[in-house]
Image (cartoon, rainbow, N blue to C red; front, side):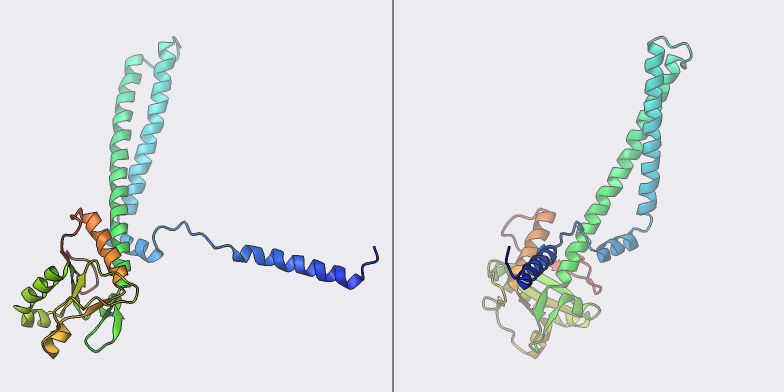
Length: 253
């Protein structure tokens, strides 16, 4: 009862500060599966898909509504309602509406599945563009920085597969250099944050060869992307693969 007045003020201030700090300490959750850039690229590559899905969805909903009405009319006629339409007419309407609902529902579902596959592919390409490699000059750049300048070819597998891929590319090195091809060998299995997995790859012979090749950086991220791509393409575990990029960064093969 005889507590000094200033102490009550200090206690009240402390509680208010703690209450105001509590919401900011909670991490914000995002329900966005794909970025806005991914959605925009998907719309640009298939500009009429949204309109088609709207039409298919509207027709399917309209047919489902007609199906419910025709079913109700058939039931009421079967129960002896005098004002209900003829039973054969109601059954015919049920068949037509059911067929239309299934047809337009199937078209809507196919478009939705194709949109999901396309956006997943675009999202993988965006994550690929963020991966980094070291050029012959020692400069570390992302694949996004190479867009418009190089056609990147990633050879991913064990050391023998990568060395064989480099040897095959060496046979046609001059034409590939003219087309701006940059080979990035990735030895799978050598994971590590910040590591560069060039120890198992044959060293470049000359300066031209060094311009022809680059070394992946942060190989754990590269390996994770390759593993996801192999699962999507249903490639057996441990099998060597190559990924070719267009000049604009899209995955070609």
